[in-house]
Picture (cartoon, rainbow, N blue to C red):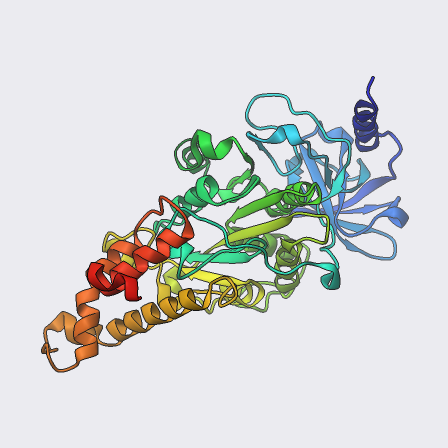
Amino acid sequence: MAFRDLETLGTIARQTGARHPLARIRRIDGTQVLIAGGRSTMTLGDRVSFPLSGGRATGEVVGLSQDAAHVVVEGAIDSLTVGQPAVCRGPVTIAPHDSWLGRVIDSTGRPVDGSPLLMGPKARNLRAAPPEAVLRRGFGDRLSTGLHVFNTLLPIVRGQRLGIFAGAGVGKSTLMGTFAGELEADVVIVGLVGERGREVGDFLRHVLGRRGMARSIVVVETSDRPALARRRAAEAAMTLAEHFRDAGKHVLLMIDSITRLAEAHREIAAASGELPSLRGFPPSLVPLLAALAERAGPGKEGQGDITAIFSVLVAGSDLDEPVADTLRGLLDGHVILSRTIAEGGRYPAVDVLRSISRSLPGAATAEENRLIERTRQTMSLLARNDALIRTGMYQPGVDHALDKAIGQKPALETFLGGRARDTDASSFAALALALDGPDDSDAA
């Protein structure tokens, strides 16, 4: 037997070993149970199993007192009774393996696509620390995305963390599917947190497709799953990304959505007795999001990078609600998808003026930055005068700059919704053509 096979067997033995601290249920209250005994070795976040539940219930330690541990239960709490044994299993871990590419798993590393799954030789904690800040590299090279707007005005670079903020039905999933198939990366990790079951199948078959799935691992916990499982899906996706990053790979991590992660955390916090403060969200939400965001990004020397895209559902385009507001301050850029633009038929429905990539100006040359600045000035001029133009109150000839911008608008709209078939340079050439027309493009 090969040494690597022995390592894998060791991982299995450690995860299923018989020696675990034994406690007993002392009280059952809603979705929380109080257990006593074995507490000296328990820590927050430890997994707890209940042997007499027939595998129907597990839990996670969310609080510790002098003589007991508070456990939030996932699964059939009606299968538990006072006095039943409870076994502390230690931190939640998964053991990723390179053969998982093309597979769909749940947040504990179990396959959900009907085929067996080989465990890797190393079990990884789902709540690992990020790389040391002073040892991390800076941003890497600009990445080709397959879309003109992201190749030019909102560039994505290796190791960047980007948020996509959108309401329901504005094209968020389609955009993420395009990134999964087109954005330069060695491995793609997708975390579907609290997604509707029907839409998971649609995402796998029609959005990712065979091309996207070939280099992807998808972690799924649907909306009907317990809050602990839904929150764990994001952590499991990040852990998989770290596995491949540590192997020197460039990983594209996409989590859809951070809003549902926050809602799952709110349920858990409420069950554990934490009082809400941020428009109904608990104070612990901010460190949760910060810890997740910090684990993504550039790696240390000798490691790869995690380029992360987090989606955020914003009800009524409210970017000041706690999840959206917190995440914008943590990430390296944000993209706003506009329902008005989507209803006008342009996809991706990116509101360029409200979006920003913090990879600029470093991700573009001086000439490219001048072209980006000109484009934003033109779009800003059109936006400021939109009401006058739409109502017919503006008379051509009053403002030469505005007249020129109005003439450029159709070509700009076509460009912003265009697919890039070649290099980033060709996208910038197309942008110059949209601004200046064929006769003046060489001077742009």
